[in-house]
Length: 389
Image (cartoon, rainbow, N blue to C red; front, side):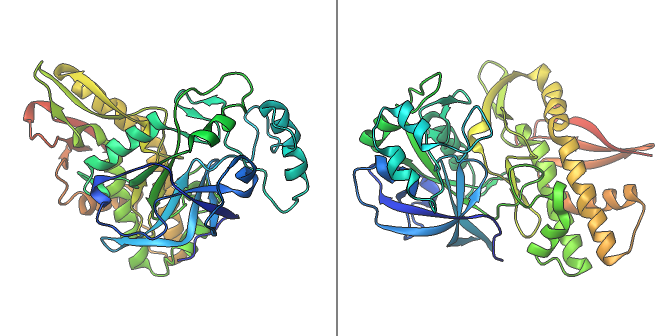
């Protein structure tokens, strides 16, 4: 599979300081660990870059390598770098203007250098405080550390059925470069440490937003990209999508831990969403990619049922919407249309056959998700209606 997207060339620099995911210490990836920056940032860097590598743009501040990949359990993952700079100004839809960068930073000559290079994308990491814990165009150490913590809890990419695109390195921006970056801000200066995240992703296909190819916008191109050429492949894709989607909806109970004060803790989503912060593998599995937005929360035992409901409802619509697009495209290409409820129940039963947390229960005219937990505590089981007749 060849990933699609706007091409981007990044310069590779030696890293001054890195932190590696303990689960990937034995993996030898030649391009790691390094810092990757666009040509437009070279004016701020004192050192000379090692070489250049071809990427494709991903989201606002990320890029995915066209060539660097490793195989994990039969799935091909590509090198992804988060925090390479943005092309768009934070408070407008306009592209970055080198003159404005000069005025903000107080560094003379930067507009002349960049303005003379029409072939260079004006992409910048800035010092503007953004999303509470990160600089605009870059990544903050606090967010990256949280992402690494989540990733290290997983078995490479698997957190009890919830699939993650693993963070493998945190690369710190050198201090001299960081000082220059922090001069570029509009209103509020980011005061934390600026880093880059090096991740592994199975594709750049998202559910609805932040990608040129999404299930919601152009599912036909997704089928073509993933070479879903037979009904059997489409069915397998749907099973994997449903299996990983249900795991997404039930992350809290899949990460549950007991506390000494008769409360329980688990992961919940904070300021991240299924429609824009997860990617799909060519086999249909959903991998959550922006791990910084997972929050470890504490809940009273009597409030667990409500938290389960909240987490399911939070992403249920996006999940069902995407499922409908995939199923409709399967029917359009290969025929064999069946009643939507019968089809969905059949897929649920196959997808959840060996699930350690969620089972199916039929009662009267309703099919329920019986949502258990990895602790095996019967008192915390919650039934959620998923299909009504």
